[in-house]
Every structure is written in structure tokens, then in C-alpha cells.
Image (tube, rainbow, N blue to C red):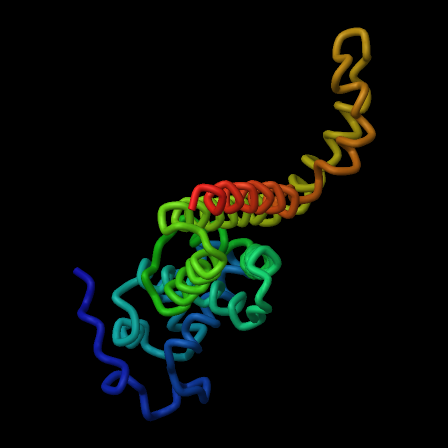
Amino acid sequence: MPKPVVPEPARRRRRPTKNGVVLSEDLIVRTALRMLREHGSAGLTVRRLGIALGADPSTLYRYFAGIDDLTLAIGDMLIGRAMAGWRRTGDWRADLRELGLLIHAAYLEHPQAAVLTASRISGKSHEIAADEAILGLLRDAGFPDREAVRVYHTFIDMTLAFAALDAAALALPEQARRADEEIWQATYARLPAATHPNIAAVAPLLIADMNDSAYPAALDMLLDSAVSRLGAASGHS
């Protein structure tokens, strides 16, 4: 059974660990991110995290209820890093596009963590701040509330889905990832027009495009649609 989480003021360790550091939620999450990058999700355990921090593993339960709670905090930190680089400019479409790209990039900086967290809902501070900002952009732009929620839902799900998809490719072993990338040149480019006329016609474009993320293009398609929906909503107001 998970142990109850002690409130922040009461759980701070005043003495440094044997590694000479003072534990904090931020330090634990950053250490967990490093462990995920180096060892993958299988390498992230309370015991190994305690060793990396130079602390008794049981001490970590004073900060997090367990690995799942820590996982949610990792996802929230990634969103926080994206939000730290974002500012509103007054152009809702440009602002939403920039935020989407920042969230996507923040996850891809930590592929193993992205695979683990992109599908989760944490309810933590950075996630809530991002949701508030997105909905604020849309409502301030003039979207009716129902349309604002629809665009928000599509935007955030698409952003996180692409983050998970692209991160999963990056998290593959190098040899497997390169083999996947070479399929477009080794297989698709050699299909004859007699049997596969459509693939043959666009093969050079497939080779040029298919190993890059489709997220920026998908994001622009979504935002173009949102602009049209806003115009339609305004015309009926």
C-alpha cells in the first residue's frame, strides 16, 4: 500500500544525502528524467532512484506516493519546461502554434519519459497552467465555449499523440530506428509504377518527408480549421 504523502514543509530533508545534496521534489524528478534517458522505463525503480540520489529509497515516499505519482510529476515538469519558453503576443493562432511546438519539443528532448507520460493526466500545476492558457487564448479570440473546448481537446490530444509517436521512434535502439528510416529508400522507392502507380509517382516526396515529424503540418491544418470555425461562429453571432 502506498504511504501517505507528507506535506511539502514537513518533508524537506534538512541533512544532505551521502552524495552531498538536499532532497527536493525538483531534484528527484530531474534525477528520474536522467535515469529514464539512460536506462529506459525498466530502469526507473524506487531502489535505483534512491541509489542515484544517495538516499534510503524509503525516503522518496515522503515526496511521492510511488513510481506512478513520480511519473505524473515527470510529465508535469515537461509541460512546465515548455510553458517557461512561451509568452502571449496577442495573435491567438501564432501563440497556440508556438505553444504546441514547444510542448512537442519538450517531450522529444526526453523520449523515454515522453513514451511513459504523454498519455497521462496529472492534474498538477504546470498541466493546469497550460490548459488555462490554451482555453484563455481561444475564449479571448472569440470562440464560443463549446467550440473553445472542442479546439482545445483536439489541440492537446493531437500534440501529445504526436509527442508519444515521435518519441517512441526516437526511443528505439539506434539500429532499429535507422532500419525503419531506410525502408522508404530501400523499399518504397523501388516499387514499380506498373503495380504501384501512386507510390511510384510520389516516391521522391515520400523519401524526403516521411522520416520527419508530421506534427507541424498537422498543427497548421488544425489551426486553419479553427480559423474557419471561428469565422463561421462569428458570422452566426
